[in-house]
Image (cartoon, rainbow, N blue to C red; front, side, top):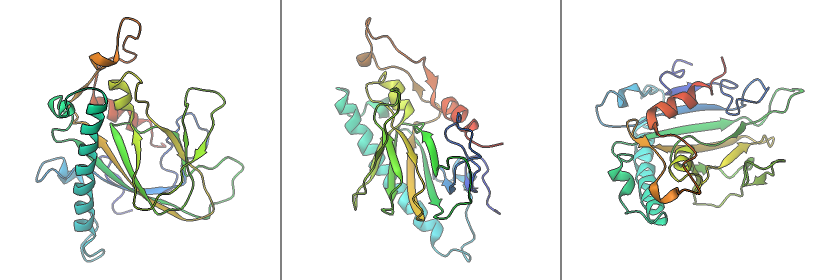
Length: 246
């Protein structure tokens, strides 16, 4: 709690977040630690909070190394997405999205035993991620589910099976906005299984000043843009604001 969340960095305790804002539950049964961008000596990188070296030796350097490596993977994937959209490989770089991108690493712990409740308890209630894409590494414990057709009712949920050595990759909301729903963001949730669960989610978000607007190749007279243009930082801030339980 000495490193409790400030500026979306640091520790978030159990039930402090509710990713599904329509849910009536007290909050999601997970605790987490946020690590934001590492841009050298910039003001943004200085917002990160770190436990003292004597408390957790080598922990900061390990997390920073992982952050840099998975950021590199994410940027390579973004280039592949550009090619899949028949764009130049460096389109998202030219658009400013990958110019000092907003990379957030989130370390997650879901407890195995939960207090008894008459409400449905979620490890993470249903949501889609906010940025371009997410790379998730897990410890192999189940509980993660996805809904392929998020606008259909009733919603059908499927278990995501663990594949050793692989990332789970989720499309985020900003990529959905860019592609006019051609690439849909992944609705997902985590259900308690009675087993303790750990995971590491890396959120690759555009540079906060990047303008996210429908790609010309993804709209037409018969399929006009579904979302207005928005600055990435403003969108992210608005989404995060409603996540935290007051």
